Length: 416
Image (cartoon, rainbow, N blue to C red; front, side, top):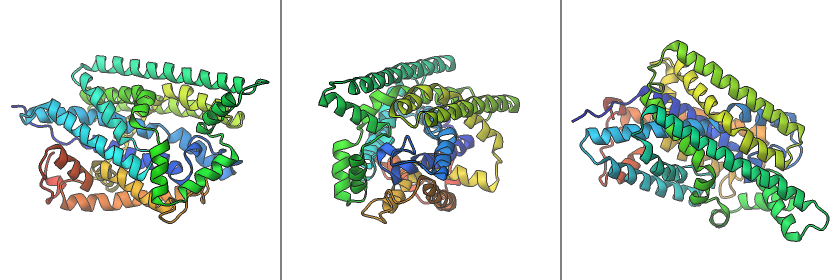
C-alpha cells in the first residue's frame, strides 16, 4: 500500500493568498449591483480615488486570484486521489462524492446567500477534470492550453456579437426588440440605464426574501457558468495538476527558475493589464470595449500572471514566520474563510443587515476588505491549534465520507 501523502505547506500558503485576494476581487460585487463589477463608471463618472482603486484591482487582483484558486483546486484533486489510493479506497467514489457535496454547498451559497458563488462551478468542472488527472505533465499542459484557446475563441465570438448587436441597435429603423437586446447586453458590461441602477439598488437594499427571489430568477446558474467559463477553469485546474506533478507548486524548483517565472509572468501580466485598463479608460468604459477587454484581451494574460504569482509567493515565503504561518492557516481553512466572507459582507451590505449596499464608494469598499483580512489571519490559526479542520472543511469531509470525522485535536498534529 502506498503511504498517504503528507500536507504540502506551499499549497496552503498560495491558497491563503488566493482566498484573501478573492475577497478584494469580490468586494465590488458585494457592495454594488452586478453590472458595477467590470467598470467604475456604471453609476456615474468615477472619482479619482475610485478610478485608482479600479485600476489597481484590475491589474493586480482580478482573475488572478480565481486562477490561483483553480490551480490549487486541481493540485488538491491529485492529492485527494493519491491519498484515496494510498488508503485503499476507490478514488472514483471519493472524488465524485466530494464533488457532489461541493455542488450542494455551492447551490445553497448561490441561491440563499450570494449570486457570485464559485463552488458549484468548481464541482462541475472538477468532475470533468477527473478524466485528465492521470495524464503526464506535458499532456496536462497541452490540454490546459487547448482549453484556454477554446475559451478565447468562445469569448471572442461573444465580443464580435456585442459589436454587431450595437451596430444593429443604432441603425435607423432598429426594432424595439433589437434595442432591448442591446441594452440588456450593455448592462452586463457596466452600461446600465438609470432605471436599472435604481431597480438593482432597491433590490440589494431589500429583505432576504426579496434577494432570494431575485437570485432565483436572475443569478447565473452553474450550467450557464460551465458553458461560458468552464474551459478556462478546466485549463487552470489542469495546470495546477501539472504544477504539482512537476514540483513547481511544491517548492522543488530552483530559486533561479522561480525568479525567472515570477519576473516574466508578473511582468507580462501587469503590463498587459495596464494597457487594457488604459484602453478602457480611453474609450470611456463603453460596454463594447469593456467586453472586449475583460473577455478577449485579458484571457491569454491570466495563465502567465498566475504562474508568476505562484512563483513569487513561494520565493517570498518565510517558513515559520508569523505572516507566512497565518496566511497558510487561512489557506488551510479556505472553504470556511470563503463562505465566511460571504456571511460577513452580505450582512454588512444587504438590506437585512446594515444596509450599506451602494452607499460606499469603490475606494471605500477596500476599507472593509482590510479588517476582514485581519480577521482571517487572527482566527484561523487559533482554531486549527484546537481543531483538526476548519468548521466547513470538517462538515464537507464528514458528509463526503458518510461519517462524522474526529474534530478535536490540533490540525498540526495530523498530516492529512
